[in-house]
Figure 1 (cartoon, helix red, strand yellow):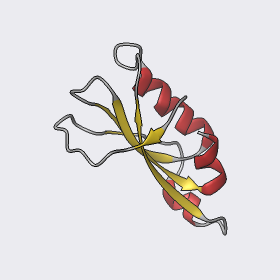
Figure 2 (tube, helix red, strand yellow):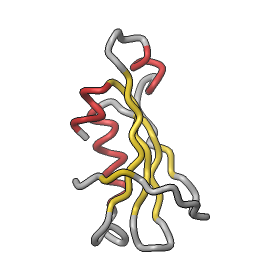
Figure 3 (cartoon, one colour):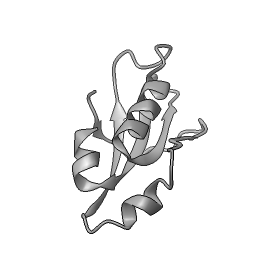
Figure 4 (spheres, helix red, strand yellow):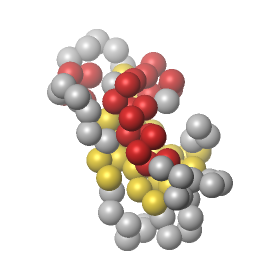
Length: 90
């Protein structure tokens, strides 16, 4: 995956939450690890290839939360939150 910082741009597409098993960010916050939040925008062929579903599945595996959505520009934007090491791995 190639995550890039998200440029400040408003889009009307709905956000799809990354649902996690367990308690999600509440469980992550109970750890002593530093937490991190990253906004990203992914360019390339990311729409029509189940990229959002893949991102949600990876977030569940890794143990982070956030949201992801398609944009009218043909990109995917999102936000991922959790322990710093896990956010860095996604």
